[in-house]
Length: 301
Image (cartoon, helix red, strand yellow):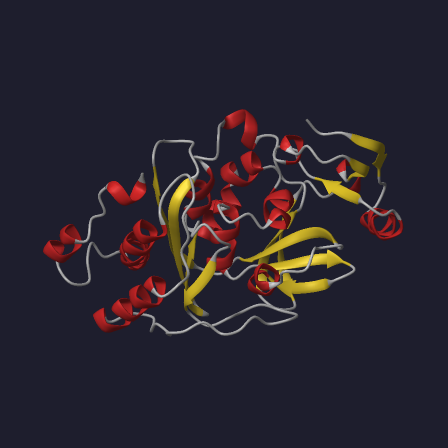
């Protein structure tokens, strides 16, 4: 159960940032879906409901992307899932990524900002945004790429105001293995092909999502570039290299699956995501795709 000493409803992101810096032990509350499960008392809870961060705006003059969607940190996952502009900017991958997160009521409560700032290893939202090359805008920290944010291990003491997603033409695909609908993903992957190039990411390792192919993009502090690169129309060798990079990530055990199982399945999901984003059933033939199909085995138990 969530316990806190003081509840403050900030009038602006700047006021929230000043409160966060001045009051030790204070925390920003998003939808509260995960925070409410914590048993640690919070001295001051800061609510951003009155800060006007619950809208999605399309702009054409973004300094990094040109055309982009500015998604407020307090936009709920339900709104994010159903918004037509988000669907267009993600080729429908946004809906695929969040539709199995618990249930409709939960998605209508929790926020995009809370999902991002939580930096949860199981986060479908962080994986999607990483593959899309999104930027994050903070009061205090300025604008940074999401890969830099996910690589940073320091606690975040800034206030996230917007997630900025390129609105350029994109082909994207989200893939995941779950025990059942609405469960956490055992392993997931997302591939996106835009005019800026390919970006492919793997998440639920169960660590934070990581790029396995495509160049880093975005503003502010840059993360290390990911290798290998993939041409606009990938060759089988390039796809195999991306799968090999996915296999080389660090995987761990938890109650959902073993690290060995995740390492076995991740390259398969990467291949499927790239092929789906290409609009091709298989780059190496239907027989090869069928042979790669993962099965739930002992390693997942």
